[in-house]
Amino acid sequence: MPEARVFILYTGGTIGMGHADPEVPNSPLVPKSWEELQYFMPAITPDGYFTQGRHIEFEYHSFEQVMDSSQFSSDHWLMMAAEIEKRYDQFDGFIIIHGTDTMAYTASGLSFILQNLAKPLVLTGSQLPISHSRSDAITNLSNAIHIAAAKAFGLEIIPEVCICFNDRVLRGNRSTKASTNDFEGFVSPNYPALAELEQEINIRKRYVLPMPEKSFSCLRKLNTRVVEIGLFPGLRPEQLARLVLDQEVEGLLLRTYGSGNAPCSPEFIGVLEKARENGTIIVFVTQCQEGGVNIGRYGASSPFATLGVVSGADMTHEAALAKMMAVMGLDLPHDETVRLLETDLFGERSY
Ligand code: ASP
Image (cartoon, rainbow, N blue to C red; front, side, top):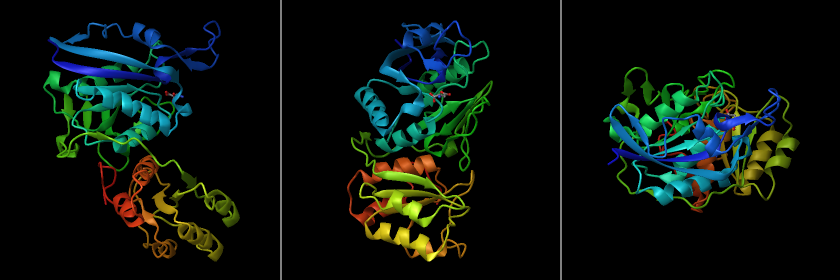
């Protein structure tokens, strides 16, 4: 009898990539099949994984079309969520093998779609393909297996969507991709790591979400009429207007300066006022790597307080975007939507 059952979903990413033309070492990297990836993971046999006298059973599923994660949209989050939901009761933990480029977006999306998880859902990938002699893939995968199969190893369960990378486990909706080169590809700037995997595995329980009281559920629909815009010196109000005052836009995520500052010219404020009159939900986050917004701290943010702008606090922009799509997809009255956006739902914001 296995001590834990883990479901592995392969979606693509560098981890399973190889050169488009194997004869040309500089040809572009493209995703390869699950079979080719599995060839490099001899420990993970179809019979399961035997380690330290423990037996972990796996079930694998590959996206029909494995992809570079830069090709994903929120529809892919829903597809991944559906694969997990189908098997939720049969497995003790879940691993999604994913490209690093949009892993933080997917992890954020899934943290709002798969609600009240009582089991670990671990996203992982690697900076170098698994076939590369110095790849980080095997370490990342093996660490992910330990977290997903925590039950078999007598470890604390991390009942949330997390990213396992470079010997650390980070909360998914607090993570952001920080490097294209370093093995430490992800950081969680406003929240401590949930676990460290050195010789010993140290799960920092006080930072892990508690087991949910409500039962597991899965959202079926997101509102994708959301745009994300980063402020930059010289953004003209009429440019912003073209992007935002579009009937298709129901939510605006604005990456503001510092603690929520933005241009305060009447023209700029006028665009946001008009958007609000159209019913558009406006959320401010910071474009700083660390910290969050505090609307009203400076004169350069106080006009937005009276406009009904929602504070994204210290959420990453990935988490804020995914949360807007999830919460706005519930089709609740405006005040309730704003209340949920300003509430910490799944550990994504501190205040
Ligand atoms: N472009 C790749 C992807 O996101 C990068 C990676 O996996 O590291 O699929």
